[in-house]
Length: 358
Image (cartoon, rainbow, N blue to C red; front, side, top):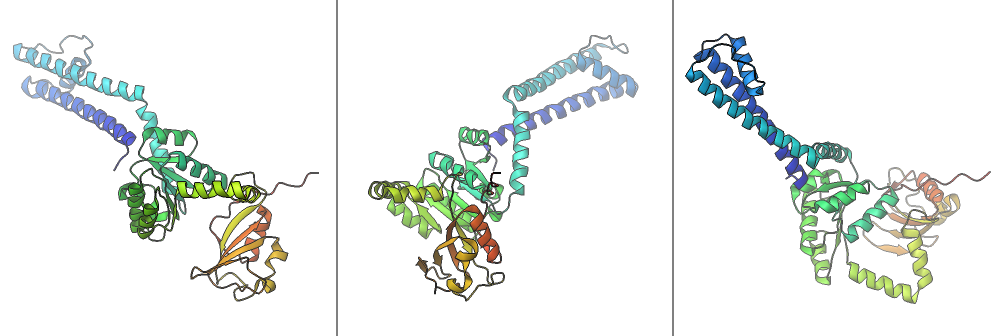
């Protein structure tokens, strides 16, 4: 499964190779004729064939009869047609920029092959572009898939790794390293396409976290049954956020300020406790003294069975495989990461704290 750009590049490449092989065949044919039929030495036969195909206007190497001249005419015609074909294909490749595009494609494929633990963004429409901006702000390695060549061009202009293809196909997901990815975001315009993408991704990599976009409540349920770990409806979510912004504007400003953007003072981060490296498994928050040691605030704890503890108290115990949702500055969250062993963070790529002014 190749993208449209790759198909064009490979077509031009195949046509140029075919033209070169045909030219070589004509050269061999002419040499064999002059050598075997006319009885010339190999060097004279090859020389006569080359100057004939090159149409340089030199005279005959040796005298030719009518039969030999008729063959030479046919050889000239074949050479002119073949060389004209090669020149035409080569000129088209230069004008269309296929050679440059081929270099870009090869470089892009090498970049994709080096990705591991990356995110895959399917769809580069309005929703996909906003997701890409957030990924870039977080420093997340990701690759974008879209079947629209124009959208892919826009993504590449913005500096993203982009692959042109149908995200619903297994071959496309394999091309972007689905087996090495940690998360896939299906932001395609069609609910059916998002469902097919999630099903394919979960089949190829059952461990990948799949996030899907849905247009209707019915689609939300189907995507969840299809294996999506989280389903977001822009219309439902947008309506709720607009209502919250109208009713609780200060709360929404604060929440938006800590979950989006690259110039934040505070961050929300998710950590998962590893019992092999965390020394505080089984201890309460009071005994662990995470707040006093790091300055970061533990907002919630999700147990391994999915139970969510919001606003944990000092008596709440840290258990194996707990996920901690914490808030703090970049430096505080780094400190917390080190205190806990370090525990495994989904993405601890926070910007470095600026050095104090002199």
